[in-house]
Amino acid sequence: EDKVVQSPLSLVVHEGDTVTLNCSYEVTNFRSLLWYKQEKKAPTFLFMLTSSGIEKKSGRLSSILDKKELFSILNITATQTGDSAVYLCAGNNAGNMLTFGGGTRLMVKP
Amino acid sequence: GAVVSQHPSRVICKSGTSVKIECRSLDFQATTMFWYRQFPKQSLMLMATSNEGSKATYEQGVEKDKFLINHASLTLSTLTVTSAHPEDSSFYICSARDRGYYNEQFFGPGTRLTVL
Image 1 (tube, rainbow over the protein chains, first blue to last red):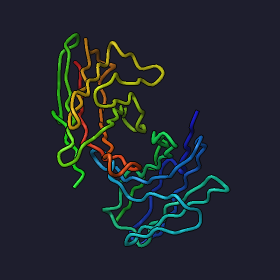
Image 2 (cartoon, rainbow over the protein chains, first blue to last red):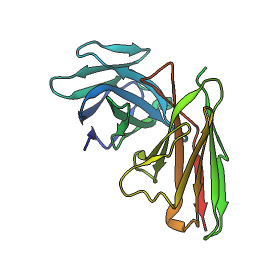
Image 3 (cartoon, chains in turn red, yellow):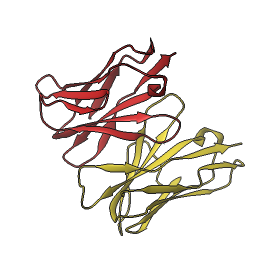
Image 4 (tube, rainbow over the protein chains, first blue to last red):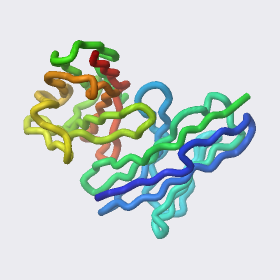
């Protein structure tokens, strides 16, 4: 059974801090790893990672995948209150089925 | 592009009634749609996968007679919660896979179901 574990479960930081969110996975016939941001409604897509060691970047957010260690991190620099959300990672297998981690709840205080 | 809508966004119903939730891909053809359930402060749990024109595949522990899924066209899938009970209260999210973007699922905005 595929399994995705995220840490920490929750995090409280102040604006301007940098945070690193962790995601480890065990996915049979792994195809890709995806990061999502979820506020009040459904998740919104952030990144899809397929290759090891190649950083993907979007503004203050960046993510990288380590396929040897079965691990990914999501970095957010210079955090803002608008970054407060639940961040989900999901492993995608060859059948294109997503297994979600439990999420990291990030709160950014002014 | 790649917009998925859900209707209704919120529904409150009495115990024992049935509720239908629609999921539509607005600007693409979705050969596969997925239904997830999310309880408060928990992650998304896949309930079932539906392919257009065929029966849905349910995940272990999900009652297919209780959660009826129909994927009648390439742009519409419906989830009917039959004889709803308070423990069915949850956030239901659908996603759709564009046949042109095989690796990516596009999520609908979700439907919050409250069963009294």
